[in-house]
Amino acid sequence: MGTVKIIGARSTQIKTWDGVSIIVPNSRFLESEVINWSHSDATSAIRIPVGVAYGSDIKRVKLALLEAARNHREILVAPRPQVLFQEFGDSSLNFELRVWLKEPRAQFRIKSDLNYAIEKNFERYGITIPFPQRDLHLKSSDFKQLIQEISNSTEISDSEPSEKLPEVSEFTIDSDNDLDPLEDRLTYADIKTLVKEMRSSRGLSIQDRRYRLNIYPDCFVGSEAVNWLVQHHDYSREEAVELGQILVERGIIHHVLDQHTFKDSYLFYRFCEDEK
Image 1 (cartoon, rainbow, N blue to C red):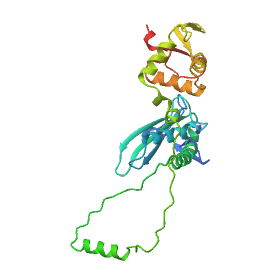
Image 2: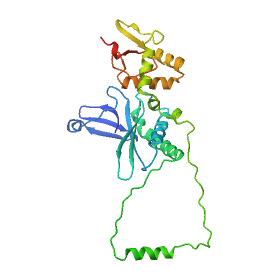
Image 3: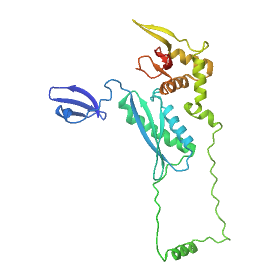
């Protein structure tokens, strides 16, 4: 894995991300699959699997993972970081944090940064990463007697003072609703009401727009939508962009040429119900 430096008639020179130059015969590219991370778009995803103990508060698990992603300056806002509940494992509840970045060469460093942040957040939220667990069933006529002998040998006398374990204070959240991911705080009714307001006379400026020689009917501008959400609903600009991307993912709005996610820039978007 690395960056292509020279393509020759017989071989290609690739410089790995460790700084090592490798000469690859061009025949190799005909015999095996080649993945080009930046062929049409350098945006790529990182997937980080995480297992937590059964009984963990999955709401806090999701929050801890999303916090780790959103606090990293190189993680893209759109596409949005996602937490997927993968499966019920043998010893753990298995999740996957999926984030996107612009520079594929940075993925190993960013993955390490995220792992550090996840471990710190899990400790803060009181979330445990379990060891593999197995049930052991023993069948023996002498087993009960053995257990009794062990119990008798380790029994503590009532006269001996017992050492009290220190109490562990549970991490609490003052307001769970305020810290929930934006998508979890919005119900279907909330989004329906918001969309109705955005399309009203007091909402977004929806009109035919011209760019170069093309006219795009019934559009609004992404940055203007962000400004409107900030002014009328007290969202931060980051939250407004995330909300716009939620509307894209739910098929409510889309980029007029379907070439962009929702961005805080001079790009044209249209409500899907306005399509001719």
